[in-house]
Amino acid sequence: MAGVTAAPRIADRPATPDPGLAAGDPSARSPGSSAAVPDASVEPPAPSAVGPRPWHAVGHRENFPVGSWLLPAGKRPAVVAIYRFARHADDIADEGTAPAAARAAALDRLDQALECARRGETTGVPVVDALPAPMERHRMHWRHLHDLLSAFRQDVTVDRYADAAAVQDYCERSANPVGRLVLELFDAATRANVAAADRICSALQKINFCQDVAIDWAHGRIYMPLDTLAAHGIGAVDFERVLGAPSCGPALRAAIAEEAARARRQLLAGRPLFDAVPLRLSLELRAIVAGGLRILDRMAAVDHDVAARRPHLGWRDSPGLARRLLLVR
View 1 (tube, rainbow, N blue to C red):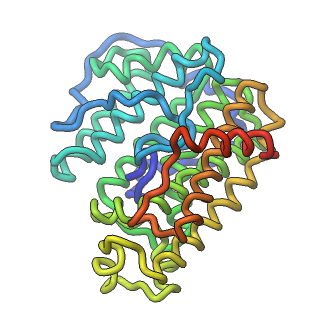
View 2: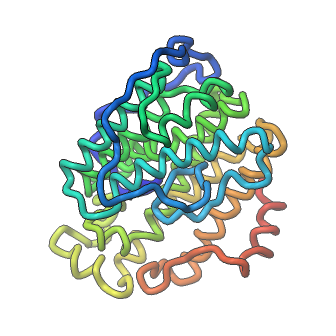
């Protein structure tokens, strides 16, 4: 799924352009009274114990660790709090066997809890109650968290994307809000920086979609643009035969290669951000982009047959990542 990956779902709260991300909305950070809200959980999913990896998105078998030692110690708790909230929401949307209606209702309750927390109220939802302190301290905007929930709701209701624009719309809520939060955390959310971070985050999400075509199909989802699949001769009647096969045939490999190339171009277009943010964040960004490029290289090395051999990063990639870290400009 999204997870911070997966197919786009219905967005009841579309992400709106942020002309001034550096400017704050005082009303979005005012304290209030304490009032419990309904439990936002849904059974059986539970918050994941996986460590923080939040820059590009959350979940969907992330490959690009974030919140590492490269980030200043004083900022890591905020990153962890955001990650745990997003991961909890992702688990509600994507894990377990609860019906779609129950998942959607649970996400609506989580959205209500988020709004209560924004007003300074205690909600009784631990991953939500952990947010006000870092959000206030670092002047981060709550609307990004609501945008994430919009994408998670979409994961419950939408399992196909007509074209690249539909996929991008999903990424703007499933991935880009996390990058914007990180920029705000570093007081670096200028218009140009936000645009560059959006490119990086969206590209990383799309790389996940490329490498997880078979896994997503097993969950009944297709994040590859349907028009790209159709251009390579893959229509709705072919999905089970083509996407459910133990290896990718020539047509599917060509479609994946096309979308991987699109993601690579978008990822590289975000490189101006490296020189526009503080050094520690710049190093973290370079490492993340290097990881994304490494995954793309690994996909190409197996002729984009991600069903037979899903690319992932391991310790053997360290030398290659180190070289890319030095060369990515």
